[in-house]
Length: 155
Image (tube, rainbow, N blue to C red; front, side, top):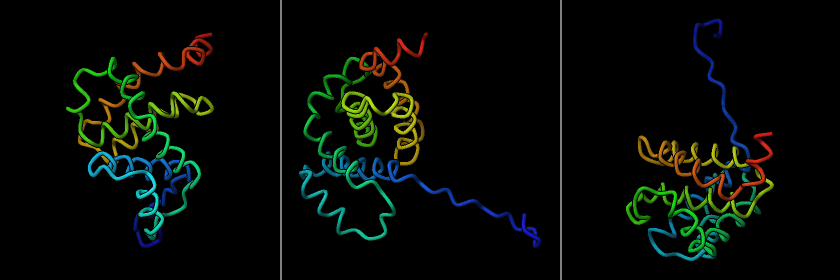
């Protein structure tokens, strides 16, 4: 509280990596809705102003990687879903693809971080309870992809 009784709000700075995930999610969403390719999505993103600080290399790797591997990622996700992929909201679909990509291709990022980031993205961009669904799906997927990491965590 300040002397005048006003509540001082802390400004939460998003990390450049989190911001890269947000932008990659938006790019995946754009691809899903319009069919735009990764190069065009990146060009339009670079033309935007006020994107904040973000890890440009990570953004590009995530966007291009998800779009290049989307069929494989869908195959990984399908057994963990309780409905068809085309029945998911566009945001849930994009978040799950992004998280599946990170789980599968970026073992340097702990699975708990991947899941937490995905849940936060779903809370920010998705429907009311979309984050709960995303969390449930990723809780099923992560042990299948990160078997060694799970085994080490249980010791």
